[in-house]
Length: 183
Image 1 (cartoon, rainbow, N blue to C red):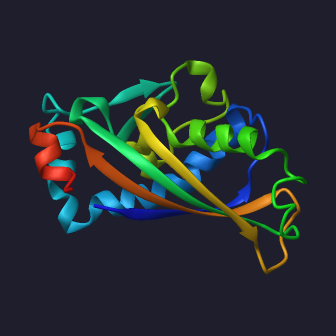
Image 2 (image 1 turned 135 degrees about the vertical axis):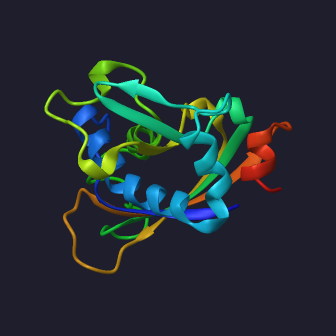
Image 3 (image 1 turned 135 degrees about the horizontal axis):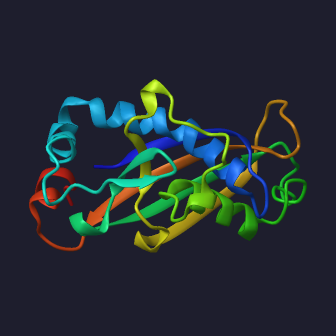
């Protein structure tokens, strides 16, 4: 089941925990909405009932639930449309180079691995329990394509508008992969 995530805002090169978590907070409501859809009932049931396939990771008071997880034998292809306010050919200069901005994004798409990847000042809001992330680990990304282009509306030079087309795939057959990912 393919879907798209949207992100608009700053995307810094070599972003710190604060910047990465801010991106997670923008994407979490979209993933929560996806999981709430009727066709995602099986995924929700797997995690609500703490089955052997549930992946819940607690870091600094947050209970993170990734949609793409190793236990479910999932991998994912990401097709990213990367829009900035700069002229064509310069779409990645003001906010930093593309590879380091992409690293910040990929880290934000995954569950934090260590305590210091969640800012000290952050505590889960009422609607952030659980806190949905796209990936358990960025090692589950099987491919990435990026199309950089110009955003035709005024924003800060370091801001981006991203359309992240998520294409999940199953590597094997588990109850989770049968219920969640369809090839």
